[in-house]
Image (cartoon, rainbow, N blue to C red; front, side):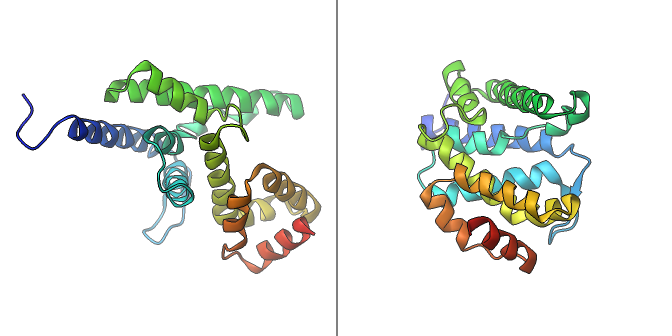
Length: 205
C-alpha cells in the first residue's frame, strides 16, 4: 500500500536513487585514485559525477535516461583492459566497441535490478553506446559532457604522458569536431592550466 501523499512519482524517485547508488557502488571499486578536494577518490566515480554535473548544466531538462547514461557511461571500465587487445588502430577500435557494449550491458543489469523496464534500459544503452551521435540530441549532450570532463580533468595528465604537443593538438581537434556549438561555447570558458590553454589555442588555430 502506498502511504498518503506518495505515489508513482515517489516510487520513480526511489528507483532513480537506487540506480545511481548501484552504479556509484560499482565505480567505487576502481583502484585508480584521483586527487580531489575531499582526498583521493576512485577515478571512474569522480568522472561519473563530473559528467552528470556537466549534463545537468548543458541540459537542465535532462531526462532520467540521459542522467543515468551519464552516470554509467564508463561503469567498471578498468575491467576491460586495453592490453588484452592487439596493438594498433584496429585493436584500439575493437576495444572501444567492446567497451561501449560492456558499459551498456552493465548499466542495463543494474537498472533492471533497480526496477526499470527493458525499453528504458535499451534507451540508456543507446545513449551509453553513443548511437546516432550528432543526430540524437541526448547522445550529443553526453558527448559534449565527455569532452568537457576530458578538458577539465584529463588534459594535463594526457599531455604529460604523451609529451608530444603535436599529438595533443590532434586529440583536441578531434574532440572539438565532436562537440556541438553549445558544448564548444562552454569549453571556451573553462579555467585551464597555462599549458592547457596553449594547446587549445594551437588546436583551434
